[in-house]
Length: 148
Image (cartoon, rainbow, N blue to C red; front, side, top):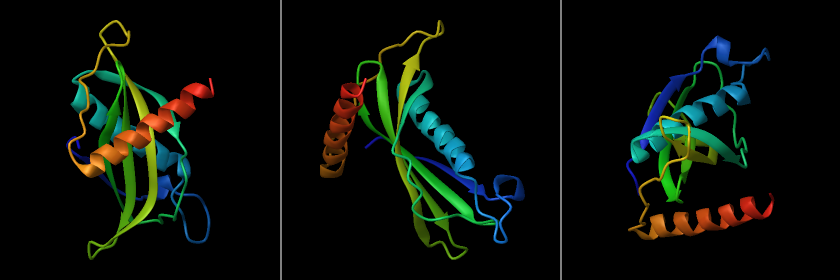
């Protein structure tokens, strides 16, 4: 798989709703997902990217005020000018244990200096995990394009 890009955030008051036990806004997590995913895509393509699609954003578990949120992004598939990035989000305890709170896939399009799509390097899966991710990405792409 491509090299992982990691982001770490501490959930601060401005990231939370007003419940008795303040929870991280879903929109804030989405913003962090888009940033870490875009960094992974930019590193892979050596180009600017723009977000084209976010797949099935499901919140598995909450993050609360003062939690540490760790995100890992990795390229799973490439087309001619687009690429898919998997972003896994976790809450990390002070002891280092991680609990998954989200997994999503984001599709980016590489763009040149004129904001036109530009070709990306091919992603060639090498491990069984990479091949499984790649094949699943191909199926997700088929579903996306069929729904247009």
